[in-house]
Length: 491
Image 1: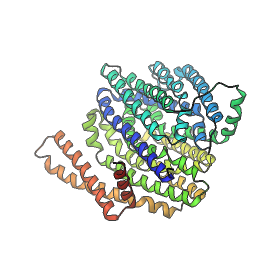
Image 2: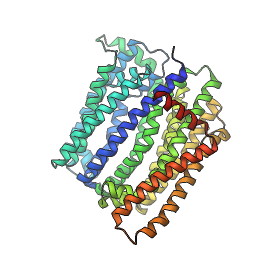
Image 3: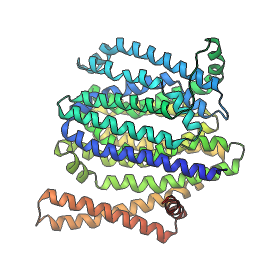
Image 4: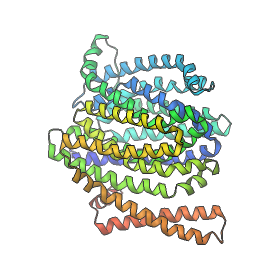
């Protein structure tokens, strides 16, 4: 029988494979789309993102998370959630279809009416796959979920690039979003053994009532989480127009590719594993601490590394028209380095069935963030991004406060788990930047700018990787040895 450690390692491997391939595909196709499209094209879809994600959470109502947190969900539980999502998806689309003119009026852009009605079809498509996704996650069938995500990403990206090349502009990005959801949903049905059944309405009420108290708080929390993540798109679209929104969204997308690579890999398994260990408190805390160390080991060098090559990367990948996005990217990378840790801590809170804490803490963060952004928007985009970054880093310690109360994870232990990797990554990236900066100043006398951008990008990436690996080896990092051993085992 496969042990919990093996299941977790396998889940992390396939979760990492899924997110790694998706982010690499996103990187490649993002570069192509960034060259084919303008900042205003990205801004058009970014302005609708907040409505999409909030409606999506209303549709699922947290029931997917509720199913995952049941020790042994029954067919009736999955069935009730499936039919609820289908009905909710259709109703929400109808409401937003009628609200499209109001959304366009808010931004002062009539072109958003047909675009929003097209984008919001995603709610209808996704409603058919949420119960299937919950079933596969609960069964720890992460390999199958990975195949769904990777195939959907490749298919949708190819379609969007073809449309962008033919001059469809922002419609290419909207189609990419819809195509991903449609293909992913179809493949979830292909791999899931569970199927819905028709049954009387009354048979759905009991499972929903049982899930509702926990799931409703998850839903509200998720809404505020998505609002927190998209508040900049909303306000920039309202006050600065689609071009500036596009620059911010482009920078956010590149940073999010890195922190979601780490965060989503863990999210595939963390709640399932922690819920399964709820009766073994010491073992549960030990597993959580190992997850924290692994997250810090990967997240800090990845995001700090992107920060020091942000200018070269943006200029070479998508061109000088995105120069302002390049100036925003280092700040968003700093913020993003802490995002996977915050996600892991919030999932730990949820695993203790304290969705009430998750709800009110998320609302508090959202209110503070909205107030801060509204108060600072006249100071310019850069000031808003700095404030956004500092607030989200600080809020990680709020999440830790609750994890300490629920699971006994002391602050001194948390700092011991993350600071060595944070300081090592900061030292390595700072040293890399300093050495290569001096080299660049000297070499610019003899070469053209673009050649030096390539030299600078490659030298910084290679030097940073070697230095970080060397520091970890000298320090005798246990997590590095475990990662290498696992890779050798898989090879």
